[in-house]
Length: 303
Length: 289
Image (spheres, rainbow over the protein chains, first blue to last red):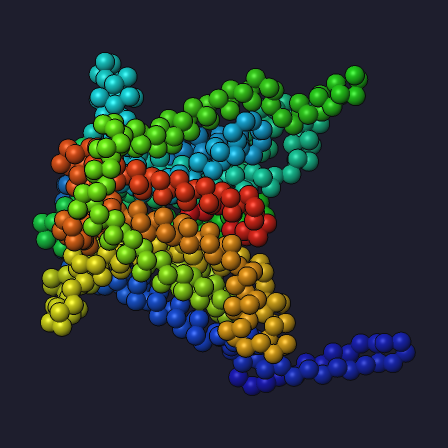
């Protein structure tokens, strides 16, 4: 593109000054910098990312695209596949909704109140990030099985928790909780007390202040936390397989069905389920980005 | 005293009454106790159900030892690789301005939105029967699938973003001033990195490495798919736990699980210490995974 020049005229004292700048309107990939190492670090990042993440994911895309629409549709609408997807998404939804309530409550209690052991509670929220899923899975099963401490409590009433969809929900509440708390907590810490004081001086009672003034501001954070917990729960495998019972159409989750298809060497069947799940996950990721863009515009904070 | 009464009334307007506070705290504590603390204590209780001798015997088992060694090996390969990637990515993204940066940051988080099982599946498709790469590599005697390389690859995939996502916001906040000063004073790129940048980011780096390592040692779903579960050869600790558990050998399963739970506890403690002591330096990296 051709270079163009700009003329600025301005007055300093009595003199009229003319400043002419020549500006190259050339498209640049990168702004110049004195710091060395862009080629090395950028190159390594792109190469490593492509080899580890991008090419394998594209390979999966090509494999499923190779089936054609009809073939893909036939595999994807297999009753067992639909059943597994339904189980995965419905249990993930319920668990994420439970986490919305308790995660927000926990974030609130941790930010607003001072009580003995608060720091320990705050630290232990991250346990599901640190505890391997298989360990969580067998521990939850031991607790909620009919002979476990909580399972035995419910057993006399004829309520079974482990080896039913209820068990899946419990495991998914466990893995999703920190996503909710850790998304809402920092936003709540930033809320200015003036807003609440203004609401109070204008005659709102505490309940009105919380529900009409504070919670609307937390909406983007709660929605993002919900989406993160939901996305994690849909793909979760380790903590669920032990407690689920794994009965097709009832308590068989989609990731488990992928593993089963692979063990049958039915690679096509596994690929189709994976492709469906990936499409939904990426749609969720896109929605999370939309929420954040909306949040920046509407509430002036990004997560 | 009138002033304290007035103070109390002001505080009451922007806070809940004491009874409400205690009810909310109570509900939270019960929820935490049931959902988080109970599973953790159950692991140790079950491991020591038949006394410490059984616990130690389970850990001394030949296959258990092999599983522990494999888990350490996989973490020892995948964590350093992800550290190098994380530092490179953070350097390229935080120290320069280029087109498509925001998109790239989103892409780095991609593995978090992929089910672990799918993370393993992609390598099965790439290296398994019916692929082009797998048979070609096998003709040179290189096994990827159902062998250690596959397990390492799957582990790298799932732990990919941990270091990068801690360092990128941290280095973006720190800006480029220190590095520019070092360069203008005559330091070369390596000197700048080792003497200026690294001291600035060391706690953030350690934080990311902790989380990356915890996940690498505990990964289950992705590794399940690629390992083939050959006892004593391709079973990591989580896989060995699954095998023992399915054999109704609960004490042995929980004994290995207790080791991983201990790792999780150590990770949490170190992470909390980092947050409390160096909270300001980690400020850019609040929460997350």
